[in-house]
Amino acid sequence: MTKKILILEDESSIADNIRYALEAEGFFTLWFATLAEGKQRLAAGDIDLLVLDVGLPDGNGFDFCRELRKENQVPVIFLTARSAEIDRVVGLEIGADDYMVKPFSPRELAARVKAVFRRGQSAVEASPPVRLKSTLPFTLDPERMKIFYFGSALPLSRYEFRLLRVLIERPGRVLSRDQLMEMAWEEPEASLDRTVDAHIKSLRSKMRAVEPAIDPIETHRGLGYSLKEHW
Ligand code: CA
Image (cartoon, rainbow, N blue to C red; front, side):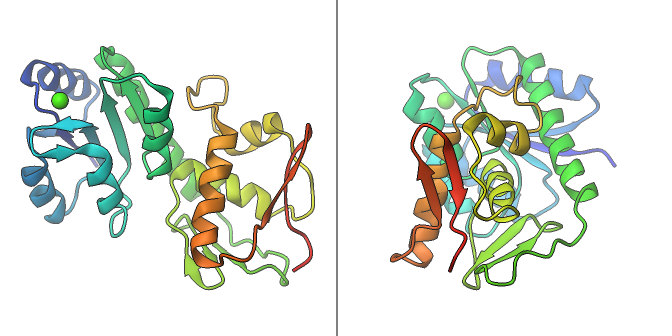
């Protein structure tokens, strides 16, 4: 089935280049210049991926994504004009799947889009039901890419899901940042998003929102991280 990609970008020349590159790869594209129109189109369903400019005339893409994530897990790739690291981290913490800093090559974007779909695909294929240690307050639903913590579904981005999954499948085991990258990132050497610490921080805050008194991830100075083993 042809994948349908929604592009929200207010600069028509950029949007044209993106559409050209994505359609050359066999994707079907739709383009709108405002969040209002994009929201309406997303609500109608059947969008497989969203390419989202951060600066749009009627609002900020980060806020839009944060809002969207409450009900919709459609993959999101951000387009941002600002290369400040903080923007990148924020973009991924709020549930984006990848980002590109302008100016970027539309072909590179098309490659990222394909990588996102590949990751989604392999997550579905490689997802037999997993039995976690029964004393843990986590439930893993690999097919839906969901992790429940004390019964609450955590709102996780793709990388956060994979990272937390690695940890909860190995309670007590100390894993270095490199090991976590290798295990949770599909193509670690190709990924720009080599920020294990930022994702751990984000995971902690999401779990703290459910259970403020517990920090389930332990930091081992100079070594890495582990999941709390005894509950
Ligand atoms: Ca813009």
